[in-house]
Length: 591
Image (cartoon, rainbow, N blue to C red; front, top):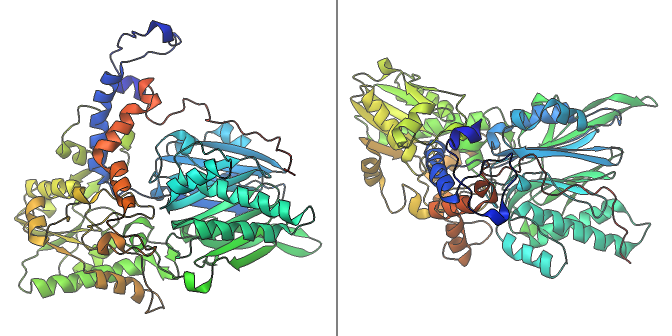
């Protein structure tokens, strides 16, 4: 139905030598790209290009006769806010792996017949927003390699040296890298080092030590921010976190319903956020430490190790998790996301009162959804009423923003509508979690004026975003950021509001610290400060490559060149066919 709506008029196919099957209608590449560009533009405006990262979930149940499929489905649905581009699940059933992944939401990717096939008591799940690689279904996770043992990976984050590592895999390790995904690099480097360790130690080697050794190599040579899990078929589930703890991952446990010889056994879970383990009935054990790997073997034994030297472990979790990405009911590194956002709103209000002691704000209104918590507290401190002025249509999927809806005004109004009585004749303070390009903010400010607002002020719970993020957040290139080379007055003029107030970076970091127990905690806040914890500098060649990949022109060119577009299929679709079949036969160990 989507394809018919986007491409209503068939175009003649002129290449007789490569005529398609008669069951497909084929369109010229030029017509397809012209039709898809408005879709891309409309999505860019609605999403504000503050693209979400990924959500990961891993489960190991003690009962071999139990199945994780429904729990993984439910857990990924809870983590859907972290990525709506693609979803995947792999399960292990007595040595056999079952995999299903595709572009789309969790509820759309997994149908009943898929769930029936996803049998087994161990599994990984993943929801994706692409920050490295493309949007093709081939790069949906989990990713799989059959040698050694059959290993799958689910990963959240970004490797800053992924290109060099991919070349290393191809040229030095002789391992095929089939996609542009840095997750495939993580998979191949781990698999290769596990093989080498096993060959070196012999048939009677300690598998746990082999796994730790392979993870140590991964952390030694992979730069960036990442958290993930390996499922080693028939052997173990492995959770790991980068040496700076930039990306989040937690571990949970619960008593198993299976008892063996009177001894209670335990089920285990790993997840990007504690809300997933809570929902599935697991107790939060703790966050993984920076540079830590935790191995849970299939017989239920737990092994932990810090895989990098102490001097290389500097804990600096991503502060954007607290600002925007994480659900408010999650606990990250011992800090309540909800409490941290209350603190953000409080400090924001004090900043406004210091800057504008004679302000004439009549009402405080959040821009849905993430900013609500901060807006409530800001209104309380300012002594002004909190009101809901925008109603969000939760049933607009970005895929169905059709050509013809070309203006920014219409695309935003598909998503939000105003309650005019809350704006009419009032001086309104709009609270947003952050402002990236400013395209959505501009239209929302105009909507407030159209609803009758006398004055419109804007405040952001985050500081101005002036630098790209390289650890898994697809923030646009510097030139496309509204705060790039602009002060607050210039930003207000650009957005069309009466004034704008941003959170100070030291106040933002203090807000998160005060919600926790470590007053000295450092944070990864490079998109605000331009300082990168892994040592990159803004003028490094890496940022030039990043610009070439992330700017709008590059994204449009990539959209135009995809095979699915040329074939008349939705972008990224594999039309029901997996990119590679899973070879479950295994391979003999090299001598």
